[in-house]
Image (tube, rainbow, N blue to C red; front, side, top):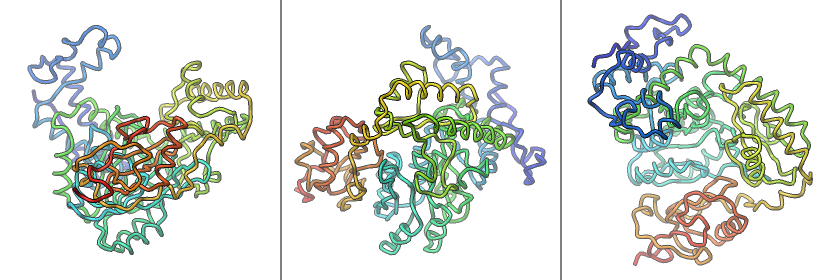
Length: 509
């Protein structure tokens, strides 16, 4: 079929944009709408043929529209529409080039590392990196130099990186080819990206930011300043996490001359599917239009809801809603739409509170740990949804036996040093490709880690592939396992064993 695809070059200027693009357009969404309106009979993928082959239960649960919109355009039309949609997205997020991703920010992390470094190159990266960023290190063969983030003394919550820490790492490793960091953190705290970018560029090194949790930053001045506007050369952001894109929808964004655009485009092609979901891409296109035209107003309402939620939650005995003052960071670096709620004063763990919210009140927080819960407020929230959350927590609070000491003593304490990087004996890629074996956790001291182990809390890697395993780390992991913390990355979720490189004590056999 042939579809009408309006390119950025042919569009009428939107009066407020001032640069000749019209954010009222949505090229991919328009192409998908035309496909459906023409009632095309497909002799192409997907094989379910707009739901005709789907079983009854899947149709009932997922809905007919899910499958009706899951179609494929011919390659030429799709590519033209995609380029136009990506150009509009780049403009909306303040980039020179944008790429749609249908495998979340994970695909962006992989592409960014492949585009900027070669095997053996040094990358300075924050220790609380996402697992997909570690996968990017494995794929690229780069050698990480980890920088430890500042941690909250009670919660072990990551509070981001400071420029001085990055500068010190660069002085120790002037051969570094890239600075990579995660900002904001899971708790909504952004690093000082502008100062870090200045340090990186002073040394002639590009800065890449995994901004998965900050897709909304570009659209309201009360939110932390977005990475690209702060001087980053490359950033990825998950539109699906906090805006209106479908699950797995993300954007990789670039500006400036420090990243080779040809190699970046080739890396994106290598890491994203050759059969992308048109539905996901169309949702990114529509979300861009929504935010470019009305994003500030939508976020203004969300911020007002967040302010009211914090006020009401702060009146519930035993609850503490974390803010910039309590976290000890500048207000300009905190995302006020993220409700990180410390519940240990109720004598309950966050895991118990989340379970009650699900079971009794039909409310699903983003996450929980032993100390608290995290709830996300987005442009999709209303006064009614916030009221339901507050009332549910008030009920739980009224029924709880309030005891501020009960709960905090159940949290294993890292003291920060236990999460500090171990000696980097091998690169993550070398460790990934080496023969491995499982050893009892208690016998792992002196071995080389072959897997990423991330206990929650605090959600920061205690072990990363290629690092020497120290006694303090083993003791900390044993305590986490004994207290039943959720563990990601380990082949043995119970942590009775850990995977290590196949030769003993770092000596190849």
